[in-house]
Length: 240
Image 1: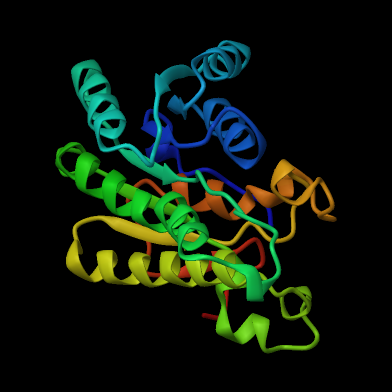
Image 2 (image 1 turned 45 degrees about the vertical axis):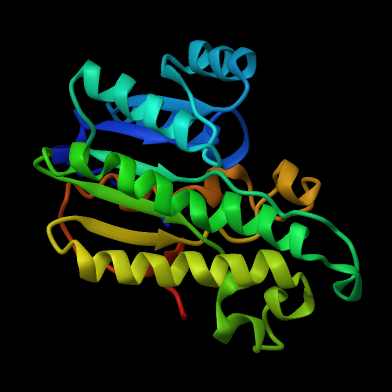
């Protein structure tokens, strides 16, 4: 996919969660290059500030599993003037225990970070986004949460059994669709990066982080135009 950022989004203010490394960091780099003012959210202040300084972004302390941290980040960004694009990127794989050994606590950890965080972030930043002329939310999901993909023997997603991570990403995609229906004045879409080399998978993915951010950057640079409630990967519209 060749990304051609919308000229109407060049001055957008964007917040990316989990932006100090991997897909979040590369998304920040590309959006800054496209002219966005990018707030780079990270739990660890030292790493987050270092990442923001390296790219010319703005650091904001952000733990998406903590209500107070999310509220504080919203106040910080509101005080600076506003927000146009929210990229919910933070996520974890969780335990690598065998399915028979999974616990309720394991599930709560994964769903809190990957799913409940999107509820926190959407609720906290919705007032700011509603003041934007081009309000946009991009939720980073995965083909591993797609029923079509995990049941297709021709796709790599079907070879992996990771109940908590995969179920959480199915939930992210459904949240995206439901929020798009609830807030039609916003453009709310989900992006599947594909199997990308990041810390999340021990850098085993065949795609580069640039390739992995194609769908995210596409959705973040549409300037508030285009469809809402969709699920895309770098090749285009993906199967749910």
